Length: 68
Image (cartoon, rainbow, N blue to C red):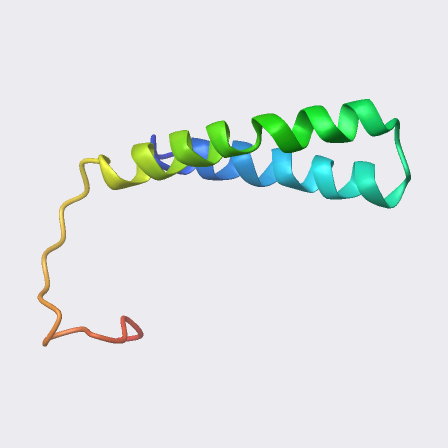
């Protein structure tokens, strides 16, 4: 697995657990705790993805839609 994909999977699973906790009407304290710390994993994920060392070999004009 690529290093920049791990934060994406981890934060996505965190948010899925958060939404599931709301749907099953879990303890309000737990839901508020998830809500209060949720910006931290999202900021970490954005930082890791933006600073990932990914080589792009084509320009925007060559593959602007990326389905070739």
